[in-house]
Length: 549
Image (tube, rainbow, N blue to C red; front, side, top):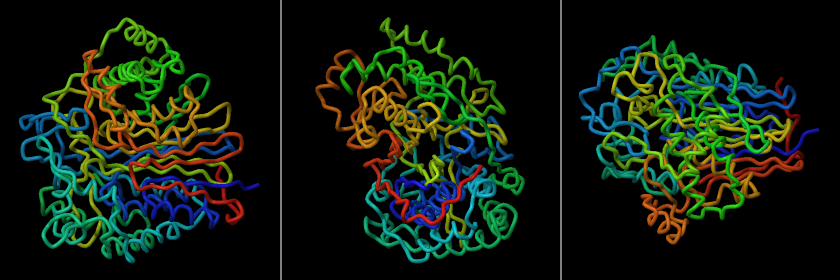
């Protein structure tokens, strides 16, 4: 018997596309792919076919969760010391480095090999039920018919530069195609409500719908990509496109107060999530007042310790020997919890830290009528600003997060992927999924996912309450707080010698999009900090729903 389905994401247009696919009888994978294609059109700096990501897929038929990880790789022309003499600083939250000339941040050299489209195709090959072209058609319509600039989009468009990072307006206007699509005649970004049509992208998507994903990697689209790279000093080559992979992997599994937590392996952020949950399991959080000074101080110390371990140990496992068993072990976490009990404060080392906190990346959570679940986080990193003439999409800017200092876990190497905090996650009680979630938000992604889990498990919040609750983060020696955390609380933290940085936004620090499944009921919540929605698809409106095995 088919039950209700649900899709949650930050863009109403993309959520509509996914919901329509569910109504047509598509499964959760079909809906996620259709949503992802639409997101690349209607939120073009957050994700796209030239991006990267991580996808969790669970089916109750087998009780198995698989991960499809598609992390962007540094081009084969990259070398560990290529930018070592250009370093000016590191972002305070650990999301990238500032270099002279911003070569890693803006333009053709910032682009890593883009595996996203190959991942969509691989997920469809293994689990999709509706035709490939059917899943792309909604995105084509949005590109042709137009969509308007939403408030959260315009906020991102208007963000200025900070300590050497490119302003979003510079990314929008970097190429003639970008200026024509996203800027007004005076060069400023288009305002909220302005309509954007992207016929070039529609033509590109039609070719991909007709010819398949390989048109992007080895066909006519690839030829245009490579010609543009060669003409403008890009590092990307035909060998890089050929080497783009989407890899199936087993999840990282842990537990928190009897719930099973399934999340993604390195170089994704799941290792940080499990380490923090393991630390905090040693404390009776429910005895604390939620978001009190004592609670924030405690959780922030767990966040800092996981951040320190990430910086020191976590990278691409094909290049870095990660002590994974130690990092996610309960005994190791108990030792760290003992440090916190003794009042020891962790110190996060940053190189000339700057105040850039990224807002890019996006997420999809889907549950279909058979209980199949998909959580996918995908991104362009800090978008490169590059749009090849006639193709309509922007490339990722993933080179900006690699460490330009050789000999470190995050250092540059040809074919290497960099750490990403994205952590699409599913929480189970027994064999049943109870929470499907993930978030955009740079290094603060994992902090938003963490707090949503704590809110549901330790404080008994509904999925809506858990997502809406004010959040904080500590990926440096300061504590970032949203503007809804009272100043009385932050004054207490400051009186203890804990630096606090107040964010002007009320809903910020990771933007969680989650679906809750309890007692046979399904509910969802889109983070109010973005423009998203949670669409329920009634079982009575669903044609015969396809599953997968």
